[in-house]
Image 1 (cartoon, helix red, strand yellow):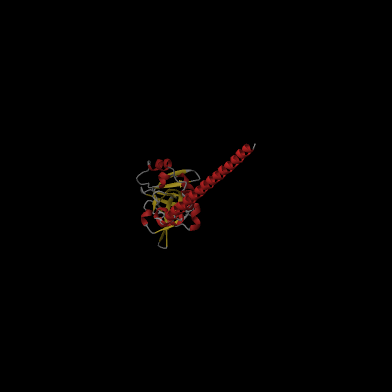
Image 2 (tube, helix red, strand yellow):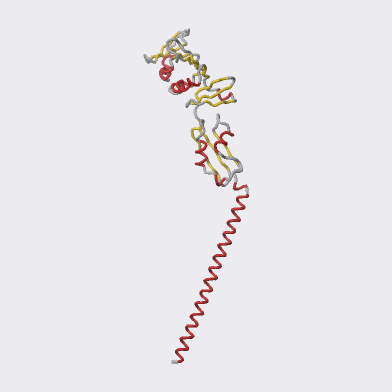
Length: 257
């Protein structure tokens, strides 16, 4: 009986030792895990700090493409983007939203290359339909009726010169200019206000082919490719003017006065 008791006591003591050993091993493994995590965290912080301080975290190059009227500096200003900015904070969608607020930018596409620290900006500018001069200043007129001051006169090479219109008259003029067939609009070299006693809105269009078109402003929508070329293909040599009558929906050739 005593021998059995001694055996049981020894077994209990052995089990206690094993449990203590297991606890000690568990505590050691836990300590190793915590130490490893702390080392990894320290390494991660070190890498992040070094990356933040390095040139790899910053925008090194910004390229702007397809802009003719809006200059690079203005695009950069609207994009809120500069060389040296933290590139990981630059999201293409947010830059596009800022750029698309510009009155003369229809759409934009941004590509951020995080590997090479570069940002590419591609813009689609609004359509301009003419230019005006006032006090020795030149302005482009957009299809929305907004005016952009310019100093580079090469930008007006393909646009008609608009004369005689005030800012108050522009909305109505723009509305009807936008209705002219694009294939005919490209032939207009100059348009000038030519009010008559019977119609204050009358306008004269000087075409690049030498034709002069006279029309009330609401007759400009009759300037389709079919109508225009249908008339000039039958012009006599002495008739270089076209009169548009929006009330009879007609275009007729005439001797220029």
